[in-house]
Image (tube, rainbow, N blue to C red; front, side, top):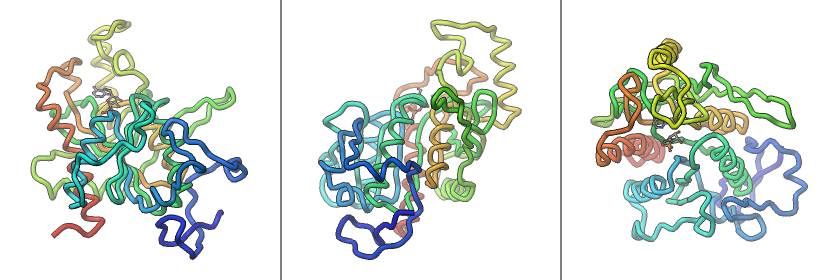
Length: 313
Ligand SMILES: O=P(O)(O)O[C@H]1O[C@H](CO)[C@@H](O)[C@H]1O
Ligand SMILES: O=c1cc[nH]c(=O)[nH]1
C-alpha cells in the first residue's frame, strides 16, 4: 500500500500512515501526470490535496441543476460562510459533469446511465486518491420508478440488482465479461433509515433496487418509441421484480455499488420514487411536486451528514 498523509488537509501534512486504497490500478503510480479529462482537472495543473483533501462526503446524482441545488442546501445546513450564489461549478470549463464543494461535502452530477456514471466515478475516485482523502462516504441521491410503493417514497437500496434480479454488475473488459458484486454497506443503510425516522414526512424503506440500461423498454414501459411486449407481459415482469424484493427501478445503482465496493468506499443509494409503475409509465405528476420529491433524499442525506459532523442539537 502507498503511504499517505495523516489528518489529510493537503500537502502541508507531515505524518504518514497506511491508507485504505481507493484505487486498484498499478499503472497509476508510474504516471507522471494524471489528467481527469471530463472534470478538466489534473495532478499537474491543480493542487488536488489543497482543493479536495478535506472531503468526507460525496453526493452524486444525475442532473447538474439538482447537484447545484443540493450544494446550496448543504451550504445553508452546515452554516457555511459566504453567499450560496458564490458556490461555483469546479468543472465549469467542461459541460460533461458539474461539481460543487461545500466544506467537507462534494456534490457531483453524473448524467444518465451506467457508462456516464462509470466514467465520472473513475475520475472521482482518482480525484479522492490524488487528494489523499480518507474515510469518505459516497451517496447516490436520485429518482426512480416505484414498484408497489406510493409516489414520493424514498428507497434506501439494500441490494442493487440487474434486470435479471442478480446482485451484480457486468462489465466487458478486453472482450471478456467481468462480473462484480454490488453489495452495499448494510450498517450505512440502517443508519440512513434511522435518520428518516427523525425527520417528518419522508416515508422511507430499505429494499432492492433494479438498475436497467434503458428508461423505456428496459424498464418495461409501454410508452417508448419502440415496444415489443404486451401490457400483461409488462405487469408479469414487474410482479416478478416485486417478488424478488425490488421496490424501485433506476439506471446507475449497480455500477455505482460495484465500483465503490471494489475501491473500498462506503456507499449508499437513496432514490425517491416518482410514480408507481403498477399504475402507469408516464411521469405526469406536477413539476412542483416532483421538485419536492427530489428534495427528500437530499434532506435525508443532509441530516445524516449533520449528525456525523456533530451538528445536531
Ligand atoms: O434521478 P437521476 O439521478 O437522474 O436518476 C434517474 O433518472 C434518470 C432517468 O430519468 C436515470 O438516470 C435514473 O437513474
Ligand atoms: O421510472 C423512472 C423514474 C426515474 N428514473 C428511472 O430510471 N425510472
